[in-house]
Length: 97
Image (cartoon, rainbow, N blue to C red; front, side):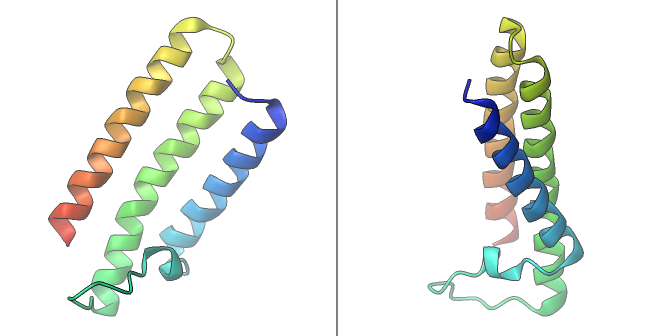
């Protein structure tokens, strides 16, 4: 879909974000200045870990697309997976908010 350099950069960025969120050091990605309700540190850690699962799934989808992107069915499956991941993330965030 994109150039190989962009795909590698995107995979690396998603991997770093996933690891930061999973280990609890990526809270700055999840901060919202307009948020009314403040989360406790425990809730923030759980929320970050939950979001890291979705970014991890996006990373895996990107790696598969990078490796097998020349096959047409992989591109179609990638789009379906991305839509499902985004829908799941929206549902998860609404449930946890």
